[in-house]
Amino acid sequence: MGSRKTRSASPAARILAAADRLFYTRGIRAVGVDAVAAEAGVSKRTLYNYYATKDDLIAAYLVSRFKHIAPSDAPAREQLLGYFDHLERAFASPGFRGCPYVNAVAELSDPKHPAASIALQFKEQRRQWIVALLRRLGADDADALATQLQLLIEGAVSATLVRGDPGLARVARAAAQVLIDASVKPSAHVRKRIKQQEPA
Image (cartoon, rainbow, N blue to C red; front, side):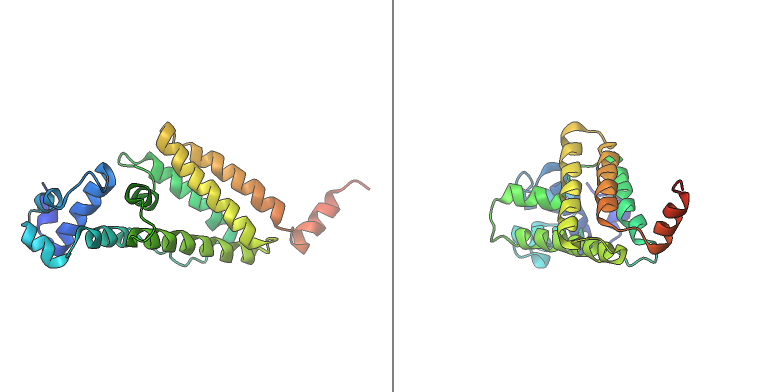
């Protein structure tokens, strides 16, 4: 059942929090609305007052996990590589169960389900964030490189779920660094410094 702190929240918030806990840890298909209602401390009728169907609740759960990446003044390279540091922290958390969007799409197996479009929106939003940072760096073919970095991220998530090794995020980070370095031309200042260091 929900904690005392959770019970002080509104019924809608408790239902969504319960759905988040249960859907993510046990799986969407394995959890019925009865279990969500019980976890939230509400009746099924109350749950259906807020979410007419289980699909509506699933969609709300996924949207609630959709965290837009906040704008930052940090250097673009630092932000890109820092994302892999963020992944390592997430991988090391006790409740890590992989990507909720991939999990939902795999479980539901319905391209027309709202979960599929929500998952795509999240992945594309993150990809566009990567593209924007790569363009700031002056990377060659930022779109293609963003796709490569996305694949590193997705691979790290999946491999960590299977192997249980949060350190795989560092492996992906190192690979990302190689790809970025290969695609970003040194600035004029850096080129001048390198030339000065070359033997006569």
